[in-house]
Amino acid sequence: MTTTTIDPAEVAKFEAMAAEWWDPHGKFKPLHMLNPCRLDYITAQIAAEFGRDLSEPLPFKGLRLLDIGCGGGLLAEPMARLGAEVMGADAAAGNIPVAQLHAQQSGLQIDYRHTSAEDLAAAGEQFDVVLNMEVVEHVADPLAFLSACHDLLRAGGLMVCSTINRNPKSFAMAIVGAELVMRWLPRGTHDWAKFITPDELYELLRNAGLEPVDRKGMVFNPLGWSWSLSARDLSVNYVTTSVKR
Image (cartoon, rainbow, N blue to C red):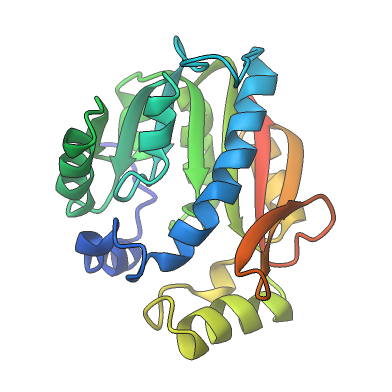
């Protein structure tokens, strides 16, 4: 039995919402809104690292990709459509049948598993790319979790990791705004104390054996009701890329 970084209380929050993953107006509305911005960043980073042309059909063919904390498959499915061999893993068992059914309805082959990063690493699984999106702020031990993600990468592999900054602005927007005012998320979805600053995440990544190479903010525009990438504004949501040399 491997040591796990899974926080059962955090898993229970998302398991309770599992049936709503593909409802763009449900409890995962914020992720549906954020997804195009996330995908722009992810695809650009993978293409640059592995020399792929995104204008080609199936540009990620030949790459094995893990979406850890895959939820209902909001990122796993577009990665499969781009040609990657995709595994989606989640600690919440209720997410897996939802993801499997939607992939089947979409005609996509995705290997979904109810498991953890630690168990996959212990089994010797290896990937070219690990997507680790909005997960690290929900685990019990961020360094141990990121170390397991490091072990899952092949030499030269790439990890994209996003999370939420910890400061008064993120409390106002991610807790007060998203949970209490807009009610985009159930109250208690996030614990502000578990948010991680960009400098803290870079240090964690380095201590896990990874080399951070990029970070960008993901900024919400309430006027356009849309998200965009920013090289300067990492005050709330942000995303990083690191590589295993």
